[in-house]
Length: 406
Image 1: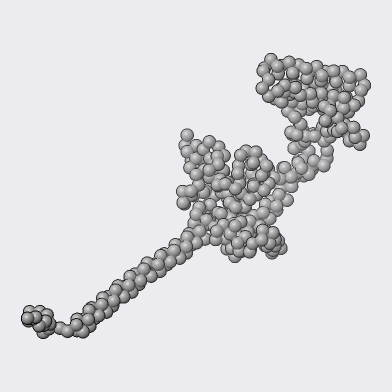
Image 2 (image 1 turned 90 degrees about the vertical axis):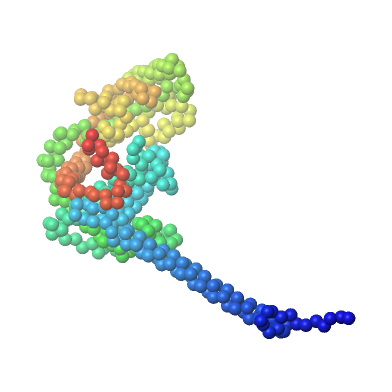
């Protein structure tokens, strides 16, 4: 006989229906969901707190970094505290000036302006970054010394027009570069540079420059001083007119010493032959045409020019192998010689025309005298402007200190 099924019971408890069991499970699930939701909220709050903290730290770091650059002393020049902002302004100006005006020379020396200068050697111990640091500090010292001296001597200068011209130049530069002025300032003068915060640097630079020009005017020499200076430096200011033609030794780059000697002998024989022909009356230009290579003959065929003739040449601008001969005392018009240029494996035929002083050089001598006086004056002032590297980032100063102690 089949047994009747009864609801299951738990010891000491009332039997539960299926409905009650189902509702209890639902309640448990709801409580679990609430706990999970609470934990999710707590986790989300914690994550948000971390993100907010990171943002706050980032903003704070940026503010602190900006303060360090724009407010804190980076180096001291005499009793002047120079911020990184001011330092970068001068560094950028000097670097830009060199990269613009001496680009070919720097390129020849292997400097790549697009790469980090800290990884390019200037000397065995100094990089080009160190070199530009040295130039920057020297420029800062000179500017501070001139500006201080100008104020001490109550030198007045209205910089409004000059400052406006600089701003116009910056505006034009930004337009040419296709960027906003604010971006142009940061790209040219440093990360935190603005029109407002570099204004004092520009104005101080203008004051220093104008005061320098004033000192030059104040030290303009008199006529006798110019004559005396010339008398002491005759060779530096006399000019010469002369004809010249060169005969290179036709020897390959890999030629042996014996082959090079033979080529030099051949070049000298040709030069001697040209000199003799000139002494017999053949024109110098005509002889240049006869001895020139086929590709160079055309330059001597123009009747209105004479490539063999140099006029108004200074001693310093003539080749070393011929300058001594040209400037020898007693040299007279028509003197001619064959001169060896061993450094360049060639011989010159040189004919002297005349040596003279051009009175237009009085102004050059005047400028030189006044510049030397002012330079000496400024150097004396700069000696009082001790440099202190507060951040320990100017390597060249360490090298200078080490050299001084040797």
